[in-house]
Amino acid sequence: MRAIHHHSSAPMKIQAIPRSRHGFTLIEMLTVITIIVILAGLVLGGFGFVKEKQKRSKAEIQVKLLANACEEFKADNGFYPGINDNTTGDGKNMTKELYSDLYWDSNRDGSGPKSDSRQHIYISELDPENNKQGWTDGRGQNVRILDPWNNEYRYRKGNNANNPDFDLWSAGPDGKTNPDNPKDKQNRDDVKNL
Ligand SMILES: [Ca+2]
Image (cartoon, rainbow, N blue to C red; front, side, top):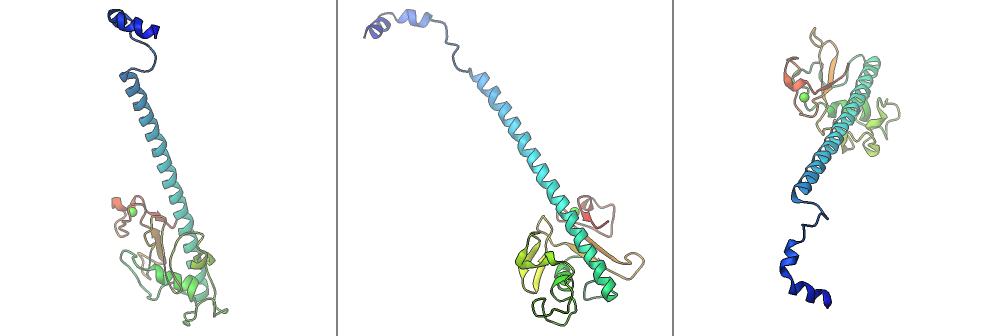
């Protein structure tokens, strides 16, 4: 009660008291917030970069797995996977055929791996029931093989000088690729079988 009485009776004296230095001024607050925002941006940006790098190395491993299996298939059958002898162009919509020859029905007799013990499974990782690679899309005989950016892997083969064996690649993060023009910018982020 005494303090209230004192304050209310001396308003001029209260105004004369120097401004408190407890807490932050607006400028200080803005500076701190700006620094926090910049740091958060750096951390999130770095995180995105690491994630993208992980996707890339995953694609490299998967391309290698598929390409090795294609070579094994060729060694057994005398030709590379795929129904047609020659497939050129952008290599789109070919992973169902790859899946069929490399996993589902490599001897092409119409029966899948569970009912046909005589056929060879070239990549067990293509089992859609045990999708540890996270790359199969579909079930049974209708399965597509996806890259880490959820686009189908590209595949084409041919018996000519330009393409004596096969091309197998991922279109990369941009999902675009132009295999017949090596200088195309779309190809820069592609993941290729080397
Ligand atoms: Ca690309």
